[in-house]
Amino acid sequence: MQVELSASLQNQIFALLEAGHPNEAGGFLLGEPGEKVIIRDVIPITNTFASEEQWHRYAMTPQDWARLEDEADERGLTLVGYYHSHPDSPAIPSIFDRDHALPNFVYIITAVYAAKHAEQRAWWLRDDRTAFDEGELIVRA
Image (cartoon, rainbow, N blue to C red):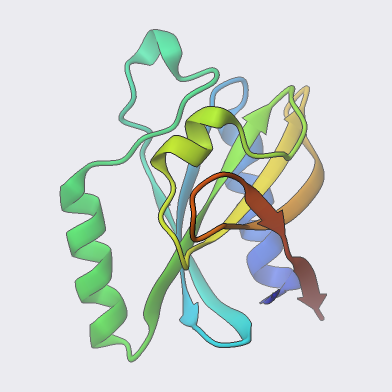
């Protein structure tokens, strides 16, 4: 699978995740689903996990999900996934990520070391929920 986003949206993601370091930060991806998922907007969401665990955990409320699904619908877009950081860790999904992931969603994970983005990768959860598969991340000018 492929996921495409603009360099401008990628830079917005980087800025938010760097500002959140040393904690995890993240938000939703709005766009167009298909063989190639096209990201049209990124919406940051406050990390609601317990403050002492935010250095390695990210969570949002059910109200955030509902609000963003409605916003996406109003804009003619779809909630296609979410993005988050892995502070001082590789951009590879954790077991926690797998246990809380939804099928058919794009997961963009960015490694952030010393408050500076490093690698960014896109992932999809397998239908049997046993693992993630890496997709091709395309950044357009």
